[in-house]
Image 1 (tube, rainbow, N blue to C red):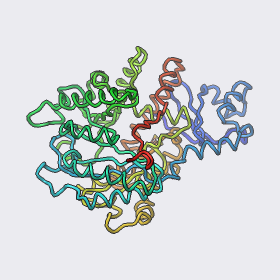
Image 2 (cartoon, helix red, strand yellow; image 1 turned 180 degrees about the vertical axis):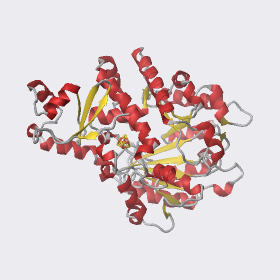
Image 3 (cartoon, rainbow, N blue to C red; image 1 turned 90 degrees about the horizontal axis):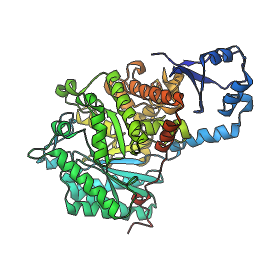
Length: 498
Ligand code: SF4
């Protein structure tokens, strides 16, 4: 693998903005610090370093804001500011762990899961209300309360209470408020669904692939788990259609956990999602949080194997799109939005600085507050390093100025990371200090051994290789994947809350 390099000053010093370069897809990719990019040939790169800009190359570079004396500085400044506007907001995602109880047994499940009789791990009404109060104190104008577990439907009365209390309390704050439920769906009932649909709660679930793989990895005693999940996905999607909502926008989101077994069947996994009516597939690799160490060896893999899987699956998704089936890959969508539109979709794990605490907070069932759900999972394994407070005793200001939070911001700023600072993909990338800590024992980690870096670099290589090919049909599909359409139905303001 070639390393990207910071450009030494070419002879045309003063004419080119600082850039980094990397050889991708038979061409040389240049990216500027402002997030612009352009391909040149190997020969043209040599000419740049000789200070010999042909009129054609100069025109091409100027159009992409690479020529400093032709730079519209106000425009570039405005775009840079816009790209980082999430820094003005504050935590938008508030994950509430309403119980650790779960009725499924998953091969990769994290240590924070508890058996169904462990009602002592249920969140109380008092903790729930204090968690909502803290979330509403966020400086973010829009917040999402996400129900996590365990299996949140196992403590449905608290889910209901948080929604009702949150809507009522938000009348004093006037924020745009969203609720998301992350559930395995096996405890869903028609009554629960009625409540969730009535209260505009987005629903997210997990699908690990075709029936045999899903059932093997996510065991639901006495039932065919795949059938149960699939039936609910279809039923919920039909509810949205019956309500007149656009199925391209409103559907159950399903998340894949890519295990070793999944690597062998990329096409079957994509076909499974399409068959279930999912329009988006997030090809997430396994992450190291909460694994029981005894199973880690059976589900983990080298990241180059994952990247082969990613390429095969995404090639197939593109093929389906060429044939008229509209489905997208989420990693690609996040990176392409930054690469092609200059927008940042504020995906908290892929931004700089990262989203720990300043983009999200996690509230455990006992009222402890963590910088993220990963921080909460580490705590379940006995390491409280990412705990920054408690709903009983902490103020919002104390959370945001906590020394751990400050360290996380520095550690996730790519302009302060060795390797990242000189990486061609710096403008579009992000890292995760919690994962660096888990893998390397330091929130700074070692980038060259980082599984996150390997995945992010490999995916961006894939995407830029496709862009280098300049196939208009693929470019059209990529642009479609970057179109961010607001799901306004799920947004609740104090004006719409009743
Ligand atoms: S984490 Fe991203 S920015 Fe940093 S070196 Fe890896 S690919 Fe480049």
